[in-house]
Figure 1 (cartoon, rainbow, N blue to C red):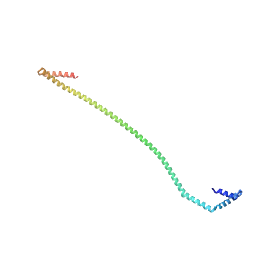
Figure 2: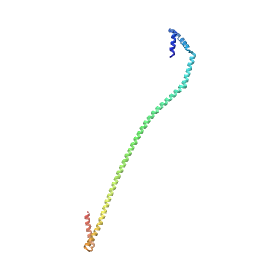
Figure 3: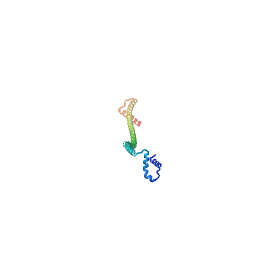
Figure 4: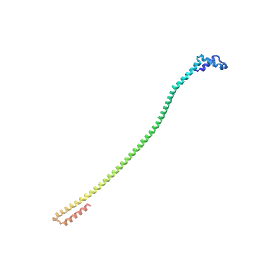
Length: 198
């Protein structure tokens, strides 16, 4: 309840109805009502001054530091939110860089694997070709060696057969053959062997 309705109610009780009286005597009525309630001017003035001093002291030493602290906390909160946003941006950038690095590493690893496969295939092909070449060389040398051995064996067989023909002929004829006869029989036997081997 405010004081103005109380004052107006008290004024109507005292019978102030004339507007001329209201203008001139309203202040007297207000002072009388205030006096009836125990409100005195010097007291009221000292209370107003005390209230202003208390309000000033509270503002200076209580509200102002609290407001400063609130402002500092709001600033810290705003800084924290801004820092969190910056960190989110940096985290997104770091994740992007991480994905890029992983992708590059994956591509490099794939390239290394492909290169290793190509090198392995090249080496296998080269080794296979070298082995085929060596095998062909060995086969050629073996064939040459076989041919040489065959010719040597044929030569040995010719000389042995010629010797046997000469020995057999001399026994069949029961006489000693001359060197011309031996040569002629040897050549004849060799020619027969050459014809039969071809």
